[in-house]
Length: 272
Ligand code: OGA
Ligand code: MN
Image (cartoon, rainbow, N blue to C red; front, side, top):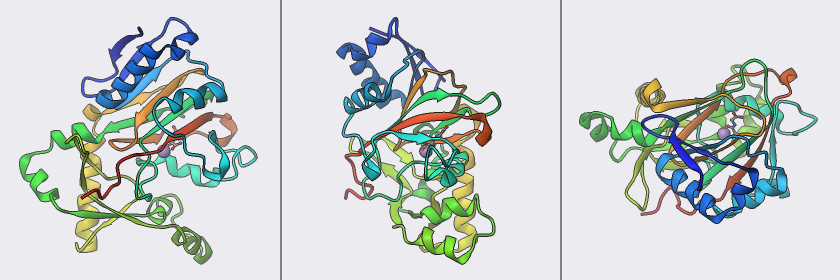
């Protein structure tokens, strides 16, 4: 058994292991699964997983996605280590991964391989807690609204003056419509907001932007957030469907490198 402590009153759990072998112990793996389900973010310090061990542990939670045939995705701003590095500045804004898929990823796992001396923490915000604490009138206002998510919306935040070719390349990727309030099969509700949220269907543009911004500010207030300061060897896993996240800015020269695995989802956005 690992010792579990809360990261924040509203969400998050740290599991303290006594040796790296604990992560192969089925009891500890099921503690991780429960913590992920009920607490949204799970931290294990001193996990020191290599790539094979990270994939193996990730598989205990579901199928590991392999876009481009690779299960391990290096999160780094160094284009020599990751051909998509140019897009990773997009992680500096609050977001949910994979919103433009019909079935969003269920969970994401990062392991710290090299940490930045300055910046480079990761922040998490619980949209479950944010939704549950919304005033009744605000919850009613959100009811039935639909949001269009796009890669373009997230890229526009980091490229204020894009070229026509850039915009065209973003638009080649699919968009996805979701409900603003997502209700899981188990009845839990969350807010589907963040950098990819482009607009609310049928609402005037300014009003739509104001509502999305207001809900994101509400969700990311301090009482619903946790900031993780990385140490090499840390493992953090989170429920991608209800937890917004963002990287705190860091320089490419910092060498910061995380290895990411993404666990395939099981519940489509539009299930009914
Ligand atoms: C990601 C991501 C955050 C970080 O890889 O999807 O958002 O802190 N990473 O690197
Ligand atoms: Mn992300």
